[in-house]
Length: 266
Image (cartoon, rainbow, N blue to C red; front, side, top):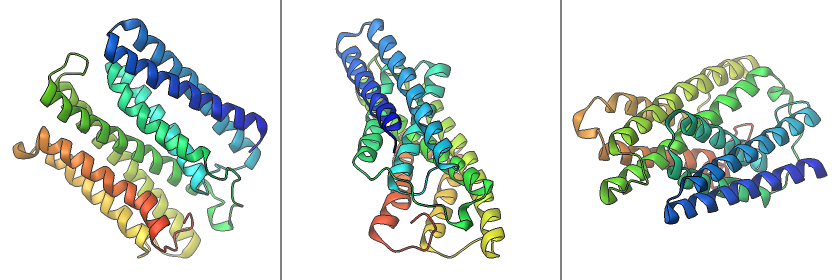
């Protein structure tokens, strides 16, 4: 990674860290100036993060998501974008603390990894690969948002604090996160299938990464229907959101680190 890209990434991390700190101060002091400053820092950090992503993409000549550093980096970017969507639409304010902490964990872990992108193998040198990756991590980001919202729902149900959105809004945010994440992950599966057919002659491979990705799709597809079932609404849906993100993390990290897979990015 170039010196400029490294500086941009560290600056983005610093902005996210300061933002999380100000959200924490807002929770304690409860003054609007703190969440406004925190949100401004998220915007600056996201701008730097986006510039760094664009620079790495330009220098590599392809979307550089071919190793653990770059997937953590892109996952963090997608999560920040998802948070900005919900903040601009719903003004969730202090709830941003939880999302920023998760974002810091992703980006902080990335900073400890080798930033040099691996050479792009011929099978990945296609726009279908880019679309597959983009929709995959955007879907992951919405599932991560649903995890955070589910946790907030459980906290709000216990604490009933004015610092957090009310239970009705949190339930709406959770359901919307799941639905949008499922739609994006469906596009990921479609483009991944087309890409696999062009590259290897089949739409679906029975490798472990493909199987667990299909399980993610089934799980969240079921959740899109579960919101209409009374006993799964509210607390049940929040718990499902948290369990589902556990499956996402195992598919994303657990398989590559703990098991062997012939997926081209493992």
